[in-house]
Structures are given as C-alpha cells and as structure tokens.
Image 1 (tube, rainbow, N blue to C red):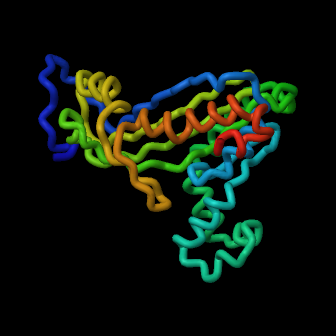
Image 2 (image 1 turned 90 degrees about the vertical axis):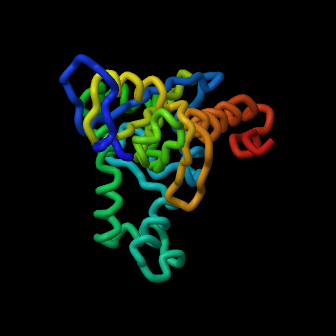
Length: 236
C-alpha cells in the first residue's frame, strides 16, 4: 500500500500536505580540529562520494568514481580506458551529471552569494555530495511509504565539526499527525538501503550514516597523527 492509498491517521484536522520533503540535519564532532580540505579530499576517494566543492572555487569537481559509473550507465564504450577529464567532454555525460547534481550546485551557489568572499578564501570548510540512497522501508508502522530516495550532503569544517544533511522526498498526501510520526520515526525505521553501485545494506538510515560517514571520519582523525595519514589511520 502506498502513501496515496493509505488511510490517514485519525485527526480532526483537514489540512493535508502533498509532495513534501523531510530533512534531517545531523551535526557531529570529528574529535579534533582538522584541515577540512585535506580531510574532504581523502574522503572523496570513497565510492560513497560523488562530488566535492572546495571554496572559493566557482564550481565543484565530480569524483572520478562517479564519472566512470555514469559513463558505464550511459553505455560509453571503453570508458575505463579514457581519463575522467576526457570523459567529461562528452556532452551527454556532462548533462547527466549536471542534472543529478542540480541540488548540490544550488547549495554551492547559495554559499557563494551568502558568504563573505574573504571567508570563502580562508579554506575553512568543504562540501561533499554523497551518493543517493534508495531506501525501502521495512518497519511495520512506516511500510506504507514504500521506497524513498534519500539525498546526502556533507559539510566538513576546520573547527572539527561535520554536518550531514539527509534530504528525503515523500510523494502523496499526509495529515499533520502523519508528518509528525514520519519525522520522528523515519531515520530509525528498519529498512533496506540500496546504493547505485550495487551494494545493499539492511538496518536503519541513522545506522548507515554512522557506519559509513561519521565513524570513518572520526577514526581517521583520531589516529591520523599516530599513523601519519588518514588512510593508514582508517585501516589500522
């Protein structure tokens, strides 16, 4: 049963919300001050990352991993033998990447318009576009939501702070009670999470974020001095 056919939660209200977004903003402590640029560039090598923006650049860089994945999806022949830079000269590929990263580019534009140029030049933070998740809800109370698309965005700051934003779109009509229930339970609901590069994980959205984003970053910072680098620290 999907959201459009589900009987609404009993409520005296007649207000209905259609096609809304649930946005979780999850701040976390990295454990110590960092060089956000270095940490962001290291983390961007993971499959989970699709793009990185390092202020004050006007544009962002899609990761090589993402470029090759999209090239394969578009059926570009011998893509693995072509450099990422050369592949980006393919108009169809460029348009597809721009379409998928429209929201990320919008976030960057807002930063450029809103922040003092001097601050942007100080390299205090970086932004990363993480891969979209397809989340199939298994939790009994929220199963009616079906499969949801979850967009993930990450900010890393020199102060040793990270902010993960999970943007989830909901189709259908919902009462105020529905929205309150969904917002309260969705991030900890049991689900099956599908990633575009073939990986599937079972658990909750919050567990996925903790295990694949927050914990790796914290581990890399915690042991980077001892092991002389993020890679060695993370793999220790």
